[in-house]
Structure formats: structure tokens, C-alpha cells
Length: 178
Ligand code: IMP
Ligand code: MG
Image (cartoon, rainbow, N blue to C red; front, side):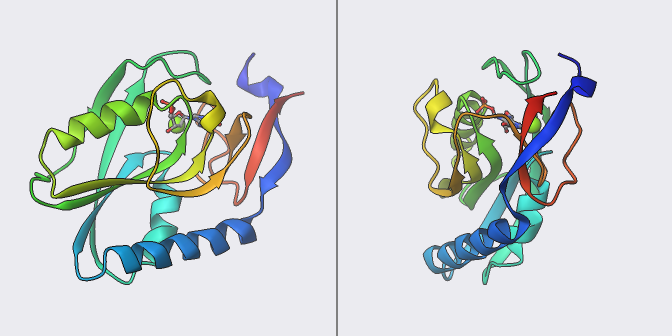
């Protein structure tokens, strides 16, 4: 199926609903990390919009860094073989780190990332994801904070893409065949 044959069908989560939930997540994180310096590790590219909205709801001292990983496989399916395309700028040893992810699907990408980052001995390592599709999980991994649990459908918008398209949409929509 080529990208041109795919289109956005129904809006699953409206922009207003996302904003409300992101503010709630920000409040929880601000409570839980009170008094700590936090490094937000954004997984490129899908999580950039979530990161930029979320961090403005944090009443904390934060720094941000970015990682880019690619998981080989078909465009809508992760393979579990993960390659680091861009690594963090600084050491995370002894730091409180929070992975900021767009979506957990099979969990293979995040499982790899979590193990990789944990081996660098951070003071703590937690995961916040905007979306979770637990039905598709292939490995055991749970986010510490989650915006929305969604059904097993391929979604785009608010940073999430299909073949690099649709990231600019303000809400989360289901992608379907024409
Ligand atoms: P996982 O390794 O299967 O958990 O895949 C994680 C990555 O696949 C996410 O960070 C997304 O980039 C991408 N992905 C998984 N499901 C979707 C979806 O429904 N829409 C857009 N991207 C997705
Ligand atoms: Mg992606």
C-alpha cells in the first residue's frame, strides 16, 4: 500500500482533549519529581510535539536531549532490530531521566532503548508516553505515565507519522485505506 492510498479517516483524540491530558501529565510529573533536576529524553521524531507541549507544563528544573532510533521493518510494523541514529549529547550517569515517547506499540523499540539507557547508570529512568497500544505488545514493558490507551489502529498526527506524513495534524487520527 503506497502513502497516496492512505488517508486520515476519523479523529480519535481531539486537539483539546490532548491539551487537557498533557496538562494533567505535567502536573503529575511536577508532583512526582518535585525538587529534582530532570533530563527529558525525547525520542525523535514522533515525540517532539508531545515534548514541547509537556515541558511547558512542568514546574521543575528540566533539560532536554534527543535520541533517534530506527527499527528495521515494514513502514507500519516494528522489527525489534534497533539502530541508534543519533545518541544523547551528554552522559546520563547519576541523573534523573524521563524517556518521552509518542507511542508504545510492540514495545520492541522502547525495550531496547530502556536497556541501553539503564546500562549508562542513571539515578532513575522512567517512561512517559502519549499513547499506548497494549494489545500489540510483544515484550513486557509498561510506561510509568501514559496519556491515552488506544485500540489497535494505526494513528497519525500530533507528531506521529505514516511515511513521514501527517505529523502536523493537531489531533490524533486513524489512518485507513481509501
Ligand atoms: P514499537 O517498537 O512497535 O513499540 O514501535 C514504536 C514506534 O513505532 C513508535 O515510536 C512510532 O514511531 C512507531 N509507531 C507504532 N505505532 C504507530 C502508529 O500507530 N502510528 C505512528 N507510528 C507508530
Ligand atoms: Mg515513528
